[in-house]
Image (cartoon, rainbow, N blue to C red; front, top):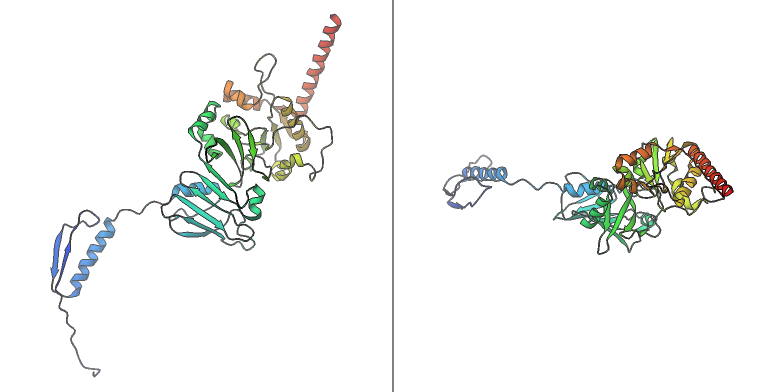
Length: 388
């Protein structure tokens, strides 16, 4: 065909379009559309219908906010617009991306939004697990990171929110649901009713201590002994050390509390304090030395029984008696004192517990007062014997 030649391109359309609409998104009434014309009118018609459909479409489902809030508790930071069905590469809170700071954590929310799963593909990490919309947690451990906290590759730690029975149990002990939530107190999933006190450091779950209703305690084998509540003393210039979990103190307004992981000794050791490397029974103090060194005042609120007083002495020997204060729990009768903070909270209330902490005495002064009282008691007994 010559370059300058003209040609004509004609269209003949005879289309019949029947649109039937039961409900939005289309807002126009039912109609029959037929034309025999150029395609431009047809395109304008389709564009109008498409715009109407988009404008009237229902809003997209909100992001999985519940899951992202739960992920924050274990250190996984995901965009708030995390979309179900998609995979994300994130920074692993366990290995921090390894030597090259890589986004090695493969993270995925299933399309239904019921749970999310993840795995770190760093060869030296391999941390993996799941988190459910109803609050359950499942961690599957791999490699050295998991061995440090006591979970092997064949084991899983599965936690779920506290049942009504356990919530009622805490309520009778004057522990509120707000305090339980703040400390992420959960329970083991399954038939056994066992409380799980979660240990966290820098916001990450690093271990659990379990307790049954009949006061049986245990931790996973191989779990590192750590102070409970360590994140609460990051910026504290004074702290409170207790034997049991710190929940009772929070009800009295004290958030700067930590508790020892393994109870109290039966008596004070007569030996000198061993070196850090050999002081295995109190290794939890040395592993948190950086936290404790910057504190100027330490209140020892251990139990009033002999093991509790022995623990106070052992802690003071290691932390320095010059900066330790000791709590003397009030008397519940003419002879016996209340044993611990929860007894006072239950019988006297939070104000009495608060007053007991505020009335703590310098450790060395407290010891001298007790020594004088013992001498006076012995002297009076001797005098009574002479008179008799």
